[in-house]
Image (cartoon, rainbow, N blue to C red; front, side, top):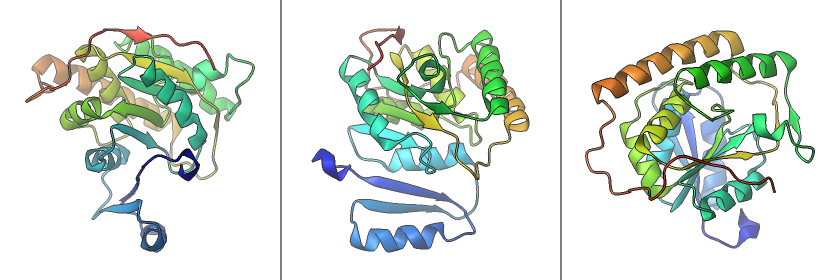
Length: 234
């Protein structure tokens, strides 16, 4: 990020951890002013943690990325190009990358198998055209982030589904961008159990939409185009 020569901030959200995450971040922040620790008093879930960080962010472009570095931060440039080409939000995709020769996706067989099945079911349940909803690497224009995170309510892993479902219903232009990705040791995702939990959360999301729970109080951003944006691989 420093090599880019542009202003930035790094917000680290500590979701009630019991290890040394907070102290390590505080030590780094004491000498690097662009780093900020956001600490939750108790564990609430990944969705709550990401929402807390994105609502505290101040940039005109806002990225959330998994802290384990499964998606290299250099892939940000691909997502930025998608926004420059007209997208309202850009999401990393392991599924698209796995079909292309110049990308590397390193994942356990079981995770890939269940991930493909999960995304197939998700597409049948209303999230059309998106091949990978769960890659933890998503970039938003600031007005879009304010809108979507302002109405989001899912605290668990299904928060990605909520963001994308509401974005599609709003008519935001979503670009799915292939990215390099590698499975990291220590992941807390339990593929089968968490996958079933996310499908239950998707049912809640659909019900919430039908009830009008995602109505914006004041939506300042009106997308000029509607639908899914297809971009050539870079």
